[in-house]
Figure 1 (cartoon, rainbow, N blue to C red):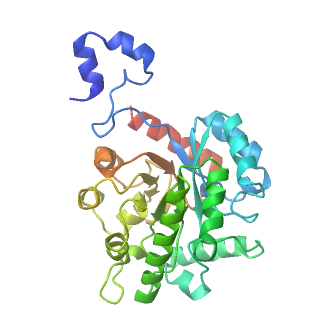
Figure 2: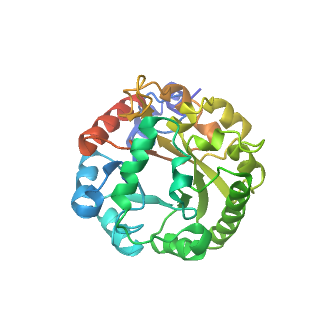
Length: 316
């Protein structure tokens, strides 16, 4: 029995509803309370580079409460210091929970190995074109301590590796080493480290799947996962089974949908990812925060508005 129904039957529902807003709603079975809806700022393309404050104001007006930053043409924090960015977000009534940073420098060949389709290749090439004149950003392999310190400066709960080469067994072993060192550095300063997947983590590489190898060879408390629901689904994974196999290891999710025809990212609720089933098992996964994401969103602000509305209704 979920908490909301218990309180209704116990006769204290009216009082608790006043004290705990949201407890009067019918929630999905896997949720103890309606979670705030977050956004991965990568979805917004260059809007965050051109006008970070104005864009954040629009997100707050839509109703977003949690944010995850991403690398940009102006570096990891949109040309601002972590403290400056955190202050803007806080003043708008939102929380900056997590930051995406690169795991290690990629060669063009390594990046293109992540593509599974012609559409993937086109999307990656478009991203590379966008970042071709960007200054070199810090990465975890070379700068994990600096990035852990930046996370502290920004008041972050999580520091997330957005991607790292995993196309050979040596690259996977390097990733394990980088993640272990970063996880230890983050723990010392009170930040949780996590790794964000794409589809390539579920490929066979020299007899191993990077996803399995990384989780089996890192400490479950030092290295958590940010599960990208769409990429894992596209890779043919049963997400609920992943939650059962690695219970409490997925405190962060990317809530992303895939178009049924193109298999490319689309607005949440417009594709075939089974969000209701996934959210029904949120507690088992260890979910703390989730972030809407839509790679290559054609109309970013309208797209994230529509995704917000869908999730706001689904999570009641």
